Image (cartoon, rainbow, N blue to C red; front, side, top):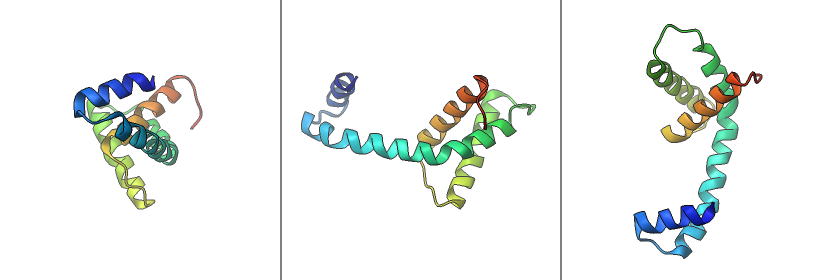
Length: 100
């Protein structure tokens, strides 16, 4: 899997393999740390919109805003991509019958 990302990284950025090998573990660990902190927030927020009379896009936008607000209150500053990943993981968990 790393080889695919490496080839994509070099193709998109023109950067060398050394830079990729340096940055990849840092980026992966930071994303995992943010997702671990956001998971409980995302589960609660996503569950709260489960029965809302909104479209999927409206639910996602509202959940993104709610999670961002709750995360900031807890001192967590995460990118929209990380928040949306947390939302997707929460959805998968809830659809699979996972617990909050």
